[in-house]
Image (tube, rainbow, N blue to C red; front, side, top):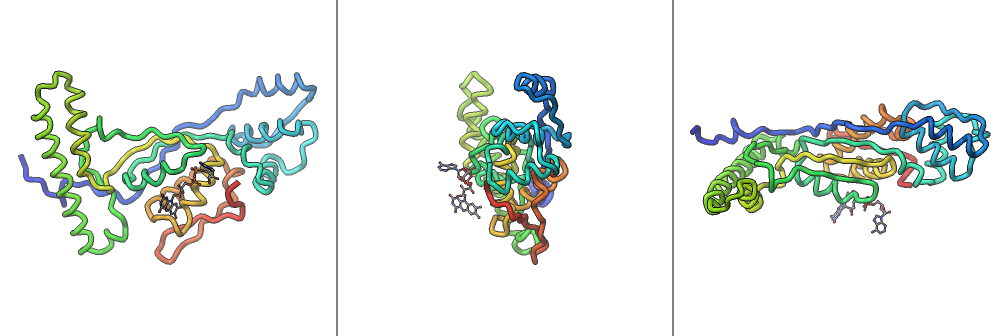
Length: 267
Ligand SMILES: Cc1cc2nc3c(=O)[nH]c(=O)nc-3n(C[C@H](O)[C@H](O)[C@H](O)COP(=O)(O)OP(=O)(O)OC[C@H]3O[C@@H](n4cnc5c(N)ncnc54)[C@H](O)[C@@H]3O)c2cc1C
């Protein structure tokens, strides 16, 4: 077997990947049935984005304001919701994502966002981590000396993990359940894996929670890797649901990265 060479065998990741894998649909028939049951002859709005439409319906249910909508359509309606801070209305628009190419240190920060978020993350107990993919911070990658130090350290951790799994599998060789044997080995061996270890996470979030995440983690005060993720999420959401996210501006920072700002702080 070839000797492990970190420079050749470790896949280094420097950019997160965001997959928007799910969005809502509107059940127009039942909206119409609800309106008819409440003596509203007709109601139309001008967005095709289900999350935006459902948020408007939710807001209009609060005041039963379907009959005489103000001008400006869905965009103006949601802007008003942001201005007055009627935040619960934004909880009815939800999306599903998969984030990959991110470190375990990033997901440790990500899962601190509790309200309005759901998570399902790759299990280091079940999944073999000998695949050797690690996320390197740009500030380390930019300098050959720090990059070499980082690669050596990550390489050592990686090798220790692989060796520990091997030894622990041997230690538990009498365990008849193959899956359990592997789990027992991997769950202990993972203790030497670094924060840089790449992970994957399925995330469901509503637009109120996403806006709060973008505000906190898209800020210049946030850590760089999670800020890159927040900016990517924002760029996707500005195309996906402009009426809910177009108030954000992306401002370039002196180090070439971006920060997200808005006049509408957390609602
Ligand atoms: C720059 C930065 C540095 C940070 N540094 C650290 C650190 O050093 N150590 C550390 O532990 N964390 C740190 N954090 C994490 C931070 O404390 C929050 O846990 C994280 O940003 C999630 O924010 P949140 O609690 O507002 O979000 P969520 O948990 O999603 O909550 C959203 C909102 O719901 C409300 N809410 C949620 N739960 C409760 C509750 N139990 N009671 C009352 N209201 C509630 C609040 O209004 C809250 O803002 C840092 C965050 C940032 C952005």
